[in-house]
Image 1 (spheres, rainbow, N blue to C red):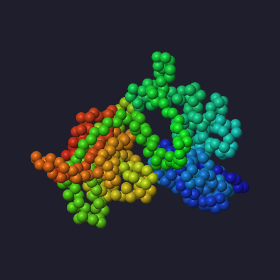
Image 2: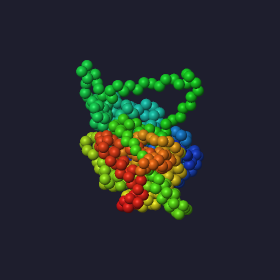
Image 3: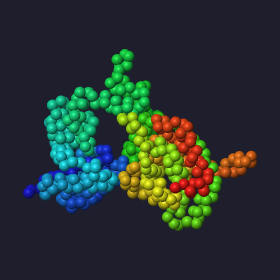
Length: 461
């Protein structure tokens, strides 16, 4: 079979991921690659993964440079194909599977064979005539029948919100867009998550649509450059994911903050003594955070509502009967929250070891998606940097987060006398839909009690 040009497109990454940032190319035009050779390294908002070549051949061209954002369906490289399309399609599936494994995705999220066929049958990026997409834009994942329907209805596929597997546009998506129902349904979904917000179809007394948040008016930013020099930097990767999650949390969740202080004088004495004794051994650093994790676990057993989530669509509170504690880490590229799974089955030293390992992986950029999934409650600690307090934002879809500030020596009254004690400021931010202030106070009181009594804390199983 004669040679042909094979366009390798960014495969489905799973986990609702539709784009990634190019970090590094492992090949250049003219290079000869073997099947499964490293092709390009791409960072998503979940993790950095290396995409293997789906086939052997000569690289004729590459698309994008480090720092560029590429989307599912974008052509990444053109490879001279001498093996035929069938082998190439098998290679694409292997590349996509490697990506899913690198992103921690399980078999339940894998695409069906028919979905693969529909994705692979999409025309090349340059061959966009007779379609609703404009020439030169990347192809939208959609089956030929869906594309035909879009042409008949005059719908631009790029403007349609996909609901199919792997971000694929379905015929129903096209019909909804054509009938003008898509925006209304988005408003209804947001209304279901936002107390007091009217549905998109609701009308005011004057007949105006009430599909947006009342009084919310996002105006264009002023021209800052008119007042002096500015620098612009794209919001990418981890920072962009953090921004999206925080906006979601702050918009949908009614936050309440409860603040208190724990006297950790005795705990600090125990911690420092044991740290000296265990110096150089795994978990030997024994930071305050490890003890806080143990105290939080005890509190969650007594007040399980803080170990839950709210399902706004079913109007249900989901209480998890497992305890996976997320620990916020400054990775250098942005805030990430690796999860300590089964923390309730660990000793304090084991928790300390797990925190050290996950923090090291975060700083080295070696965290995998599986390290970030499954959390039920998050702790964030700015104490090592400084600060007398903080009001954290809940790590959605969790319902509570505990913020720690710096331990400081402060005067305190004990049995009528002024003494110097070591005080740890605590702030619990929680979802008011699942708990009231009294619940939060009792939960934090339990944490404070245990941190102030190391013997009781160590006896907690």
